[in-house]
Length: 279
Image 1 (cartoon, rainbow, N blue to C red):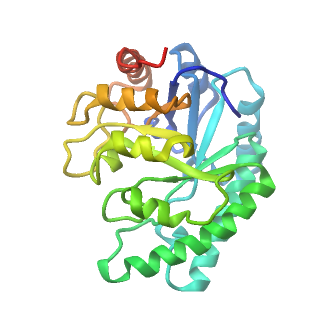
Image 2: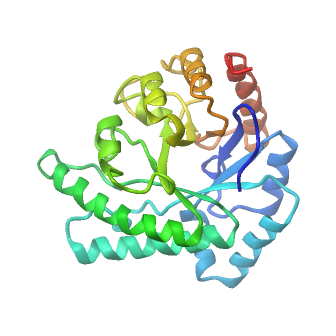
């Protein structure tokens, strides 16, 4: 699903909802609060591959006039790590990710976001884990092309693979840029370098964004302007590369409930867009 726009638009991650299963009325709530697209997590929707009722509920979401499904976040449990050194375990993780591609395809989702590791990486094994992840991604790009679902590697904190520009580009080296690009997670990337520099370097391969803030020392899923990220500079950098995809807010559930959260996110997004200079 490609949303046609001449500037960034508002999306949210299903991480905002505390339940393990998304419900149809939650999508109606998103629509009423001006949410343009949503990223759903495979760990929430994955049971659809085994449970017929769950699958049918998700297909109903696809067919209803509600907030469109933008992306699927690939599996992120430790046993589903595509950088594992044991090749049998790694191949099982790859096969599970391929099943996630199937789900994305069935739901009409054209982008899958994924982590290249699921647990912190020891310094002594980092290079080998990076090589294993690259091998896995090579297989997954072929599957992405076959299913017409693009793959976006997510920028992760320093302890994981995909920390910063150099390593992220190494992970996708020589792989088809038509089918593999990047999701810049501001909360993660802020721990490894300058966000505006990253945006400029990624350019047309920046396919999606996870939006949240932190204090600059560890990952936190704070609302923009609650931490140290320079949001005016970030938004201006997006304008310079003419980014017109979604700003997908990836926040923890609000104690006040989903309706309060969505209202706060819409106001925050409107504030962010005041710094958009792409018009």
